[in-house]
Amino acid sequence: MTSESQRTLIRRLPEKAVDDLAALHEILDAARVAHVGFTDEAGRPVVMPTGAARDGDRLLLHGSTGSRMFRRLAGGAEVCVTLTLLDGLVLARSAFESSMHYRSAVVFGVATPVPGEEKVAALRAMSEAWMPGRWDTLRPPNPRELAATAVLSLPLDEWSVKVSDGPPEDPDEDLDAPVWAGTLPIRSTYGPPVPAPDLRGNPRFPSESAGWSIG
Amino acid sequence: MTSESQRTLIRRLPEKAVDDLAALHEILDAARVAHVGFTDEAGRPVVMPTGAARDGDRLLLHGSTGSRMFRRLAGGAEVCVTLTLLDGLVLARSAFESSMHYRSAVVFGVATPVPGEEKVAALRAMSEAWMPGRWDTLRPPNPRELAATAVLSLPLDEWSVKVSDGPPEDPDEDLDAPVWAGTLPIRSTYGPPVPAPDLRGNPRFPSESAGWSIG
Image 1 (spheres, rainbow over the protein chains, first blue to last red):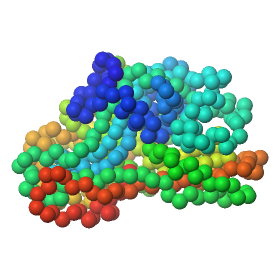
Image 2: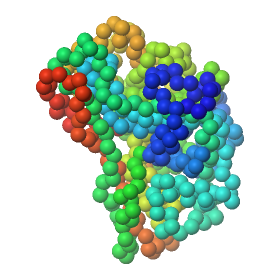
Image 3: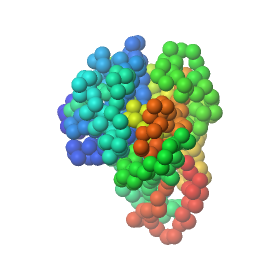
Image 4: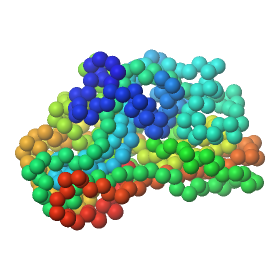
């Protein structure tokens, strides 16, 4: 964690807290989906999934200018954005010690709309984070599309990171249990591409996609 | 969506809303990680990842009795729990139409702690949802472990589901763009198991894990 605020103090499992900007960046760069928490007009919590990508020292959130989330956030509402990568299962000798491998980042703050004149650059940054090389093969966004697309920028000022990895941590008295123990890694891969039914001509498949991250 | 409340009205992309209990169950059964949104003492949003599993018509949330989240939720705070599965990338002919395949479920309500006498059954249900067959191979939880473990139950009363699938939806005027279009499915699999360094004897690897879902 970077800040000393109460909010980013890791209270549970503090041994899993990681005070490392590189670890934060790694999670934000690997994850595509952020869970964005805000409150509705009545102060009740709402959590929505949205595409997110890091651009330097800010997190960009993709949305629609017509969405409730965008209107609330653009109005200055506090936000909590959480990104989690599930890396595996921990099969311990007891249910209590069984757990998951994960990496999670939590960012607090107030997001601001990226202004019109910077929106194309922000959209390009998001596209390049998700699908490097793709942007330059596509036509530029038109004014109608830009007007309908919202990009919110959340500074990476107040955040915390937790990483759970390593083997099961069974107490000594459980080590003779006649049960397999260890970890099962979870891996995400791209399956075979599915061409659009209305594909015309014989365009080159974007082989650069082999290098795209999956989160 | 099941309810007519304002909260579960799908305002964005209503064509992606799915009014189907089976679709809700499928998402809850496939996903392991829930993002739990609540407000802190100052009314600010907080989103935490936690293990979740469906048990009939309720969602069980796993936690620690010492956590801030548990204390807030057990105190009757409103909660919004969102589970998202990322299924693929949609490579359209424009950045604007490019998107992701996903399934997401949002559940609103108030979660209640599962009382002590029901906690073992609830933990067993969660274990069986995540790792079918594993529970019976492990020793039962002891009183100290049960006291430290919190299970919260959220009824599946107020919810909404969104599913994004299908091919890119490019407008006619983009169909001649000289670019590949289609979808890239994302698949999650288990990698080779990693035995615990302190594994003793030669216990059988849980081959039933081949059937465990990954979310």
